[in-house]
Image 1 (cartoon, helix red, strand yellow):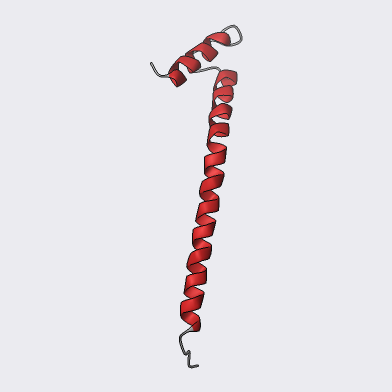
Image 2 (cartoon, helix red, strand yellow):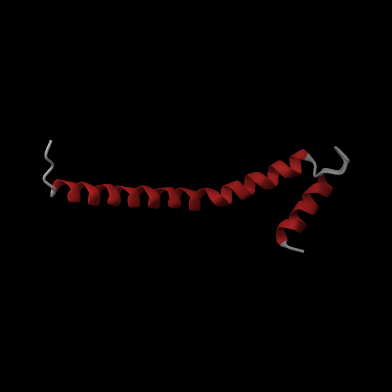
Length: 73
């Protein structure tokens, strides 16, 4: 059983007093999801920064190539 599965089971058992049923209680699910989102925040922001840098480089390169062409209108 993975760490996440064990954590979900533990959190779900903590909230059994509040609500019972087939599905994971809302509060346990919300807690787990928030922690997972927080873990993904920095890598996501880094990815966005890298994409912006690459797009900037592509636009710069294209601009340089187009400026060398003689465009006749």
